[in-house]
Length: 340
Image 1 (cartoon, helix red, strand yellow):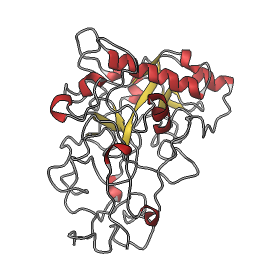
Image 2 (cartoon, rainbow, N blue to C red; image 1 turned 90 degrees about the vertical axis):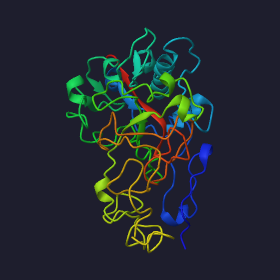
Image 3 (cartoon, rainbow, N blue to C red; image 1 turned 180 degrees about the vertical axis):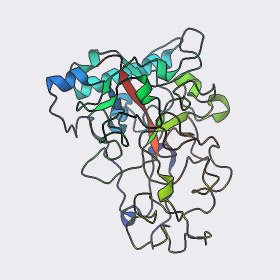
Image 4 (cartoon, rainbow, N blue to C red; image 1 turned 90 degrees about the horizontal axis):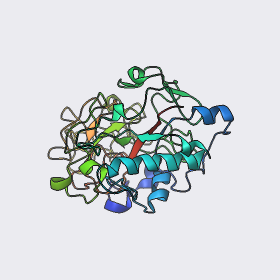
Protein backbone atom coordinates (compact mmCIF):
# COMPACT_ATOMS: atom_id res chain seq x y z
CA UNK A 1 0.00 0.00 0.00
CA UNK A 2 1.25 3.47 -0.79
CA UNK A 3 1.71 5.61 2.27
CA UNK A 4 -0.17 8.86 2.74
CA UNK A 5 2.17 11.84 2.07
CA UNK A 6 3.11 13.92 5.10
CA UNK A 7 4.76 17.32 5.52
CA UNK A 8 7.62 17.61 8.00
CA UNK A 9 8.23 21.31 8.76
CA UNK A 10 11.59 23.06 8.59
CA UNK A 11 13.70 20.41 6.97
CA UNK A 12 11.47 20.46 3.90
CA UNK A 13 9.01 17.99 2.50
CA UNK A 14 9.35 14.31 3.20
CA UNK A 15 6.88 11.70 2.05
CA UNK A 16 6.01 8.23 3.09
CA UNK A 17 5.69 6.11 0.00
CA UNK A 18 7.84 8.54 -2.03
CA UNK A 19 9.51 5.89 -4.11
CA UNK A 20 6.18 4.31 -4.90
CA UNK A 21 4.91 7.60 -6.24
CA UNK A 22 8.01 8.03 -8.39
CA UNK A 23 8.72 11.55 -7.10
CA UNK A 24 12.26 12.60 -6.29
CA UNK A 25 13.12 16.09 -4.98
CA UNK A 26 15.73 18.07 -6.88
CA UNK A 27 19.30 18.00 -5.71
CA UNK A 28 20.62 20.59 -3.29
CA UNK A 29 24.22 20.86 -4.40
CA UNK A 30 26.18 23.72 -5.90
CA UNK A 31 24.26 26.10 -8.10
CA UNK A 32 26.65 25.36 -10.95
CA UNK A 33 26.20 21.59 -10.87
CA UNK A 34 23.81 21.55 -13.81
CA UNK A 35 25.06 24.48 -15.86
CA UNK A 36 23.85 23.46 -19.30
CA UNK A 37 25.40 26.57 -20.85
CA UNK A 38 28.59 27.41 -22.64
CA UNK A 39 28.88 30.87 -21.14
CA UNK A 40 29.47 32.60 -24.47
CA UNK A 41 30.29 36.29 -24.58
CA UNK A 42 26.95 37.08 -26.19
CA UNK A 43 25.06 35.23 -23.47
CA UNK A 44 27.04 37.05 -20.80
CA UNK A 45 26.09 40.37 -22.32
CA UNK A 46 22.41 39.44 -22.41
CA UNK A 47 22.05 37.55 -19.11
CA UNK A 48 19.48 39.57 -17.16
CA UNK A 49 16.76 37.31 -15.74
CA UNK A 50 16.50 34.17 -13.63
CA UNK A 51 14.66 32.38 -10.86
CA UNK A 52 16.73 31.79 -7.74
CA UNK A 53 17.26 28.06 -7.46
CA UNK A 54 16.73 26.13 -4.23
CA UNK A 55 20.28 24.79 -4.28
CA UNK A 56 21.73 28.29 -4.60
CA UNK A 57 19.57 29.75 -1.82
CA UNK A 58 20.60 26.93 0.49
CA UNK A 59 24.24 27.54 -0.33
CA UNK A 60 24.20 31.32 0.01
CA UNK A 61 22.06 31.32 3.17
CA UNK A 62 24.17 28.59 4.77
CA UNK A 63 20.97 26.86 5.83
CA UNK A 64 19.22 23.73 4.52
CA UNK A 65 15.98 25.69 4.88
CA UNK A 66 17.06 28.74 2.91
CA UNK A 67 16.29 32.34 3.84
CA UNK A 68 12.54 32.20 4.31
CA UNK A 69 11.03 35.69 4.39
CA UNK A 70 14.17 37.33 5.80
CA UNK A 71 16.27 38.37 2.81
CA UNK A 72 18.45 41.02 4.47
CA UNK A 73 21.61 38.99 3.88
CA UNK A 74 23.74 41.23 6.07
CA UNK A 75 22.04 44.51 5.17
CA UNK A 76 20.67 46.77 7.93
CA UNK A 77 18.37 49.75 8.24
CA UNK A 78 15.39 50.85 6.20
CA UNK A 79 14.98 48.89 2.99
CA UNK A 80 17.41 46.20 4.13
CA UNK A 81 15.20 43.37 2.86
CA UNK A 82 15.17 44.66 -0.70
CA UNK A 83 18.89 45.50 -0.72
CA UNK A 84 19.74 42.09 0.68
CA UNK A 85 17.61 40.36 -1.96
CA UNK A 86 19.33 42.39 -4.67
CA UNK A 87 22.68 41.29 -3.28
CA UNK A 88 21.57 37.66 -3.36
CA UNK A 89 20.63 38.08 -7.03
CA UNK A 90 24.08 39.46 -7.84
CA UNK A 91 25.84 36.65 -5.98
CA UNK A 92 23.87 33.97 -7.78
CA UNK A 93 24.47 35.60 -11.16
CA UNK A 94 28.19 35.81 -10.47
CA UNK A 95 28.30 32.21 -9.32
CA UNK A 96 26.73 31.05 -12.54
CA UNK A 97 28.57 33.34 -14.95
CA UNK A 98 31.68 35.14 -13.66
CA UNK A 99 31.38 38.85 -14.35
CA UNK A 100 27.58 38.85 -14.47
CA UNK A 101 27.38 39.83 -10.81
CA UNK A 102 28.73 43.28 -11.69
CA UNK A 103 25.44 44.16 -13.34
CA UNK A 104 22.82 46.08 -11.36
CA UNK A 105 20.55 43.22 -10.24
CA UNK A 106 17.16 43.79 -8.66
CA UNK A 107 14.86 41.30 -6.97
CA UNK A 108 11.27 41.36 -8.20
CA UNK A 109 9.83 42.22 -4.78
CA UNK A 110 7.37 44.84 -3.60
CA UNK A 111 7.50 46.38 -0.13
CA UNK A 112 5.47 48.68 2.10
CA UNK A 113 8.57 50.80 2.67
CA UNK A 114 11.52 50.52 0.34
CA UNK A 115 13.66 52.72 2.56
CA UNK A 116 12.22 56.12 1.66
CA UNK A 117 9.02 55.82 3.67
CA UNK A 118 6.73 54.83 0.81
CA UNK A 119 5.65 51.62 -0.93
CA UNK A 120 7.76 50.11 -3.68
CA UNK A 121 6.34 48.19 -6.64
CA UNK A 122 8.36 45.24 -7.92
CA UNK A 123 7.53 46.09 -11.53
CA UNK A 124 9.14 49.53 -11.05
CA UNK A 125 12.41 48.12 -9.70
CA UNK A 126 13.65 46.13 -12.66
CA UNK A 127 14.40 48.60 -15.43
CA UNK A 128 12.92 48.86 -18.91
CA UNK A 129 14.18 45.66 -20.54
CA UNK A 130 14.85 43.70 -22.59
CA UNK A 131 15.68 40.72 -20.37
CA UNK A 132 17.25 37.41 -21.31
CA UNK A 133 17.99 34.22 -19.43
CA UNK A 134 21.39 32.59 -18.86
CA UNK A 135 21.27 31.01 -22.34
CA UNK A 136 20.32 34.20 -24.14
CA UNK A 137 16.62 33.38 -24.53
CA UNK A 138 14.22 36.31 -24.43
CA UNK A 139 12.09 36.72 -21.31
CA UNK A 140 10.54 40.04 -22.28
CA UNK A 141 11.27 43.07 -24.44
CA UNK A 142 9.82 45.63 -22.07
CA UNK A 143 7.56 46.12 -19.06
CA UNK A 144 4.44 45.85 -21.21
CA UNK A 145 5.55 42.42 -22.43
CA UNK A 146 6.00 41.03 -18.96
CA UNK A 147 3.02 42.73 -17.32
CA UNK A 148 0.77 39.82 -18.21
CA UNK A 149 -0.22 36.44 -16.82
CA UNK A 150 2.73 34.95 -18.70
CA UNK A 151 5.29 37.17 -20.50
CA UNK A 152 3.77 37.69 -23.93
CA UNK A 153 6.95 37.68 -26.01
CA UNK A 154 9.00 35.18 -23.99
CA UNK A 155 10.82 32.40 -25.78
CA UNK A 156 8.49 29.40 -25.94
CA UNK A 157 11.08 27.27 -24.14
CA UNK A 158 10.91 29.38 -20.98
CA UNK A 159 7.51 31.09 -21.06
CA UNK A 160 5.81 28.43 -18.95
CA UNK A 161 8.80 27.19 -16.95
CA UNK A 162 11.11 30.01 -16.00
CA UNK A 163 14.81 29.06 -15.81
CA UNK A 164 17.07 29.40 -12.80
CA UNK A 165 20.45 31.15 -12.69
CA UNK A 166 22.01 28.32 -14.70
CA UNK A 167 19.45 28.47 -17.50
CA UNK A 168 17.92 25.19 -16.30
CA UNK A 169 14.11 24.82 -16.18
CA UNK A 170 13.32 25.35 -12.51
CA UNK A 171 10.47 22.84 -12.61
CA UNK A 172 13.21 20.23 -13.03
CA UNK A 173 16.37 21.77 -11.57
CA UNK A 174 18.18 18.44 -11.60
CA UNK A 175 17.84 17.06 -15.15
CA UNK A 176 18.73 13.59 -13.88
CA UNK A 177 15.83 13.53 -11.40
CA UNK A 178 12.08 13.91 -11.48
CA UNK A 179 10.20 17.19 -11.72
CA UNK A 180 9.43 18.92 -8.43
CA UNK A 181 6.63 21.17 -7.20
CA UNK A 182 8.52 24.42 -6.67
CA UNK A 183 6.72 27.21 -8.48
CA UNK A 184 5.77 29.54 -5.58
CA UNK A 185 8.00 32.63 -5.90
CA UNK A 186 7.98 35.49 -3.40
CA UNK A 187 6.81 38.80 -4.88
CA UNK A 188 4.62 40.66 -2.36
CA UNK A 189 2.85 41.90 -5.47
CA UNK A 190 -0.51 41.97 -7.19
CA UNK A 191 -1.17 40.75 -10.73
CA UNK A 192 0.28 43.98 -12.13
CA UNK A 193 3.51 43.70 -10.19
CA UNK A 194 2.51 46.39 -7.70
CA UNK A 195 2.60 46.32 -3.90
CA UNK A 196 -0.08 43.92 -2.67
CA UNK A 197 -0.53 45.03 0.94
CA UNK A 198 1.45 45.35 4.17
CA UNK A 199 0.65 41.79 5.26
CA UNK A 200 2.14 40.26 2.11
CA UNK A 201 5.87 41.03 2.43
CA UNK A 202 7.15 39.37 5.63
CA UNK A 203 7.73 42.80 7.17
CA UNK A 204 9.36 44.00 3.96
CA UNK A 205 11.49 40.85 3.65
CA UNK A 206 13.13 41.14 7.04
CA UNK A 207 11.42 38.42 9.08
CA UNK A 208 11.18 34.62 9.03
CA UNK A 209 9.75 33.60 12.40
CA UNK A 210 6.55 31.99 11.21
CA UNK A 211 4.39 34.29 13.33
CA UNK A 212 1.56 35.04 10.91
CA UNK A 213 -0.08 37.56 13.25
CA UNK A 214 3.06 39.71 13.30
CA UNK A 215 4.59 38.97 9.90
CA UNK A 216 1.58 38.30 7.71
CA UNK A 217 1.73 35.80 4.86
CA UNK A 218 3.77 36.44 1.71
CA UNK A 219 2.17 36.86 -1.68
CA UNK A 220 3.70 34.62 -4.36
CA UNK A 221 3.55 34.19 -8.11
CA UNK A 222 3.96 31.00 -10.11
CA UNK A 223 7.13 30.51 -12.12
CA UNK A 224 5.31 27.76 -14.02
CA UNK A 225 1.52 27.51 -14.40
CA UNK A 226 -0.43 25.62 -11.79
CA UNK A 227 -2.61 23.87 -14.41
CA UNK A 228 -5.40 23.09 -11.98
CA UNK A 229 -7.52 21.97 -14.90
CA UNK A 230 -5.48 18.79 -15.21
CA UNK A 231 -6.47 17.77 -11.69
CA UNK A 232 -9.91 16.84 -12.94
CA UNK A 233 -10.50 14.01 -10.49
CA UNK A 234 -8.84 15.44 -7.41
CA UNK A 235 -5.59 13.69 -8.26
CA UNK A 236 -2.19 13.96 -6.68
CA UNK A 237 0.08 15.20 -9.47
CA UNK A 238 -1.10 17.31 -12.36
CA UNK A 239 0.86 16.17 -15.39
CA UNK A 240 -0.77 12.81 -16.23
CA UNK A 241 -4.18 13.05 -17.95
CA UNK A 242 -6.17 11.80 -14.97
CA UNK A 243 -4.45 14.11 -12.51
CA UNK A 244 -2.61 11.32 -10.77
CA UNK A 245 0.88 9.87 -10.93
CA UNK A 246 1.59 7.47 -13.78
CA UNK A 247 0.91 4.38 -11.72
CA UNK A 248 -1.94 2.04 -10.89
CA UNK A 249 -3.97 4.82 -9.32
CA UNK A 250 -6.83 5.30 -11.78
CA UNK A 251 -8.50 8.04 -9.83
CA UNK A 252 -5.31 9.99 -9.20
CA UNK A 253 -5.49 9.58 -5.42
CA UNK A 254 -2.76 7.93 -3.35
CA UNK A 255 -5.29 5.23 -2.51
CA UNK A 256 -7.71 3.57 -4.91
CA UNK A 257 -10.71 5.21 -3.33
CA UNK A 258 -9.07 8.56 -2.74
CA UNK A 259 -7.60 7.71 0.64
CA UNK A 260 -8.99 6.96 4.08
CA UNK A 261 -12.06 9.03 4.71
CA UNK A 262 -12.08 10.49 1.22
CA UNK A 263 -14.56 8.34 -0.68
CA UNK A 264 -14.95 10.75 -3.57
CA UNK A 265 -11.74 9.62 -5.23
CA UNK A 266 -9.60 12.64 -4.52
CA UNK A 267 -6.59 13.09 -2.27
CA UNK A 268 -8.53 15.52 -0.09
CA UNK A 269 -12.12 16.13 -1.07
CA UNK A 270 -13.43 19.61 -1.39
CA UNK A 271 -11.25 22.49 -2.20
CA UNK A 272 -7.79 23.65 -1.20
CA UNK A 273 -6.41 26.71 0.51
CA UNK A 274 -8.01 29.29 -1.69
CA UNK A 275 -9.38 26.65 -4.07
CA UNK A 276 -13.07 26.76 -3.07
CA UNK A 277 -14.17 25.26 -6.37
CA UNK A 278 -12.38 21.97 -5.83
CA UNK A 279 -8.76 21.26 -5.02
CA UNK A 280 -6.97 19.47 -2.25
CA UNK A 281 -7.63 20.63 1.27
CA UNK A 282 -11.08 21.38 2.73
CA UNK A 283 -11.70 24.49 4.81
CA UNK A 284 -9.55 26.63 7.08
CA UNK A 285 -6.32 26.12 5.19
CA UNK A 286 -3.50 28.57 4.73
CA UNK A 287 -5.05 31.32 2.64
CA UNK A 288 -8.06 32.49 0.72
CA UNK A 289 -6.38 34.89 -1.65
CA UNK A 290 -6.06 32.78 -4.75
CA UNK A 291 -6.11 34.72 -7.99
CA UNK A 292 -5.03 33.55 -11.42
CA UNK A 293 -2.94 30.49 -10.62
CA UNK A 294 -1.07 30.90 -13.91
CA UNK A 295 0.08 34.42 -13.05
CA UNK A 296 3.82 34.69 -12.58
CA UNK A 297 3.57 37.80 -10.37
CA UNK A 298 0.61 37.06 -8.10
CA UNK A 299 -1.16 33.72 -7.75
CA UNK A 300 -1.87 33.09 -4.08
CA UNK A 301 -0.80 33.78 -0.51
CA UNK A 302 1.63 31.43 1.18
CA UNK A 303 1.03 30.12 4.70
CA UNK A 304 3.82 32.01 6.46
CA UNK A 305 7.28 33.57 6.42
CA UNK A 306 9.29 30.84 8.10
CA UNK A 307 12.13 29.24 6.14
CA UNK A 308 11.29 25.85 4.69
CA UNK A 309 10.39 23.97 1.54
CA UNK A 310 7.83 21.59 0.15
CA UNK A 311 8.82 20.17 -3.21
CA UNK A 312 6.14 17.52 -3.44
CA UNK A 313 2.69 18.19 -4.89
CA UNK A 314 0.31 18.26 -1.95
CA UNK A 315 -2.16 20.93 -3.02
CA UNK A 316 -2.15 24.51 -1.82
CA UNK A 317 -0.31 26.05 1.14
CA UNK A 318 -0.65 24.15 4.41
CA UNK A 319 -2.02 26.19 7.28
CA UNK A 320 0.05 24.25 9.82
CA UNK A 321 3.37 24.81 8.06
CA UNK A 322 3.70 28.65 8.18
CA UNK A 323 6.61 28.48 5.74
CA UNK A 324 7.33 30.35 2.52
CA UNK A 325 7.31 27.08 0.58
CA UNK A 326 4.43 25.06 1.98
CA UNK A 327 2.30 25.37 -1.15
CA UNK A 328 5.01 24.16 -3.52
CA UNK A 329 8.26 26.06 -3.22
CA UNK A 330 11.11 27.19 -1.00
CA UNK A 331 11.08 30.99 -0.84
CA UNK A 332 12.59 31.62 -4.25
CA UNK A 333 12.20 34.89 -6.11
CA UNK A 334 12.86 36.48 -9.49
CA UNK A 335 16.00 38.46 -10.36
CA UNK A 336 16.34 41.07 -13.14
CA UNK A 337 19.30 43.10 -14.28
CA UNK A 338 18.53 46.75 -15.00
CA UNK A 339 20.17 46.38 -18.40
CA UNK A 340 21.29 43.28 -20.33
